[in-house]
Length: 192
Image 1 (cartoon, rainbow, N blue to C red):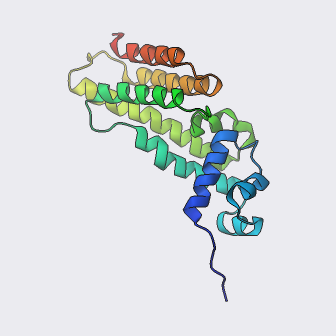
Image 2 (cartoon, helix red, strand yellow; image 1 turned 90 degrees about the vertical axis):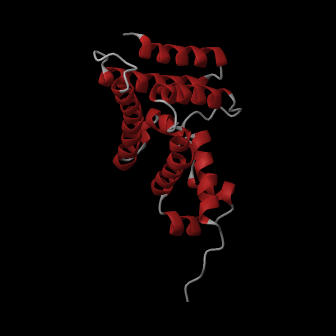
Image 3 (tube, rainbow, N blue to C red; image 1 turned 30 degrees about the horizontal axis):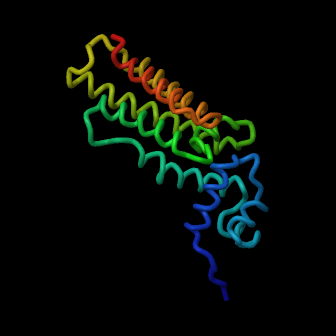
């Protein structure tokens, strides 16, 4: 007879996600996950597989619950970009634990991850760049950017601004610095 699980998978995944988010993959052991969740090692491995698979599930949860949910979708294109930068700066400023962004944190500790996890991170970076590219293309079609505006170069520069801002936020929670990065990123949209 198969024994039913005695824990909520989503709840355990949320706890693991927050643990990885705060401490990083390299600084979080399965023993840490066991202590934080109260779930026995055998049950954790049975439900999630190894540490890397658990991390990948946590990363997917983060992507859905925090990353994609934070991207504005129902405003004019240039306003979407501005709102997202402002949201990120505010979220980083108001995070007392200075967790930063799990996607960027993971990219920064790339050497400890499997090719599968690196591929997930590369997909998320592509998704960020695509968010910028789609909004910039639409703004150009709407006549809010000149025909000569280089969408690809600007989308990559905005991606770099996001990565830089989120990396800085992990080290220091300085509103002025983060707002300056936002101002610089938005200035790219007027630099034509």
